[in-house]
Length: 251
Ligand SMILES: [Zn+2]
Ligand SMILES: [Zn+2]
Image (cartoon, rainbow, N blue to C red; front, side, top):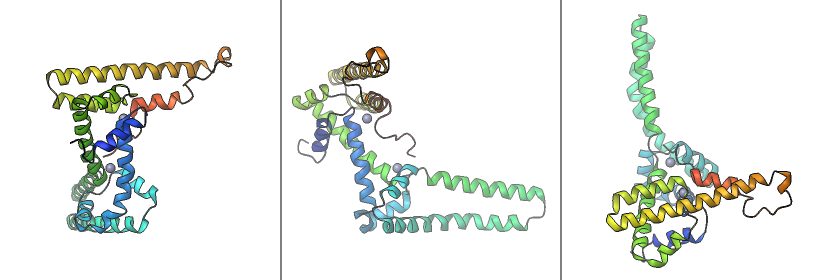
């Protein structure tokens, strides 16, 4: 386990000293996966089939477009995915549409319109419910979590690095609490929850203090006082609440 490909990024993420090491891991995965999709993935038939099947969520389509790394590649991905999707959709909807335009009675027109509408809604919902990139990120994040917990348990140097760190954002604290609840028992469980609680509490207070000082600095009585660590307090506080990347609307 010690030498696996996952231990190095986990260690490096903690070395960055930011407000959440797990966010750092996620951020790297976001950019490397966008690069993968518009690069090597295009050359692998198996991967292309998977991309055709899953498509991408709204945020990752936006990221792919924003990266502008390989617009031709993106065009190829879109063509092959939507060729398949539209073929299936048209097979189901064209006969209903034919009947709708020929229908005479309003009652029939209403029923066929409803049928056509429901079919389209179902298709659009399913289109945004799967994402090739989100699935790849989730897969690797699970491995990172396994490694993080393993190292916390077996490597005293890593454990100190974790407890001396600036902690995690609330979203990832929640994920770590849930993971520990599933994977740890007895003294491992209580030990990890204790470490995590101390990290959360200490670092929340540190950020809160910086935020209060930042606010005070706008009061004329404090204008000549130093800023201390408060200049980026608002951004840090928000990162602590939601993390670096908003994955809540991913799919
Ligand atoms: Zn985070
Ligand atoms: Zn996605």
